[in-house]
Length: 153
Image (cartoon, rainbow, N blue to C red; front, side, top):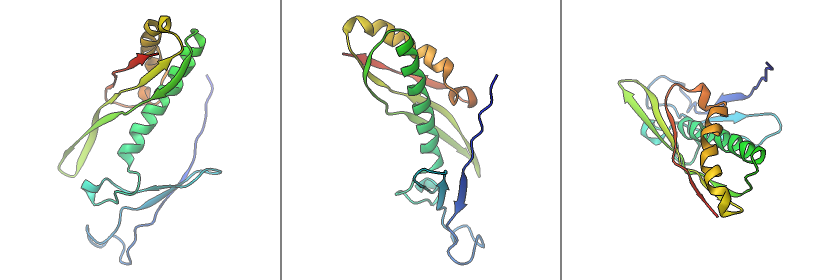
């Protein structure tokens, strides 16, 4: 077993002058800084008084799941002789709220994969299952992550 450590700096930038003295008096804006990388400007979802022009945690979670599945999928394709020439995904997620709390209850990935040769399609479709098993992020969440893939040439 090996361990990999990750770090970043998250800074709340939404103090409008009076801190959090009232629910409507502060912005949900924040900056995520990771050494050597562009800053990510974040906020909460607009449903929770956030800025629509900034990334929200729910979108970032979808992006992490989608990117991790893609990286795992490309890996299993190359090790199984499937040549992928294009890959896109439009993941969807469901957040359910109850009172002041809530949780993500499901995510579905919708990858569209282009392979080099039609004979690769069956194997390429099957490899999504192996990619899901290898995805670090999917293995870390406590809700189902589905995959409705389309493979074409």
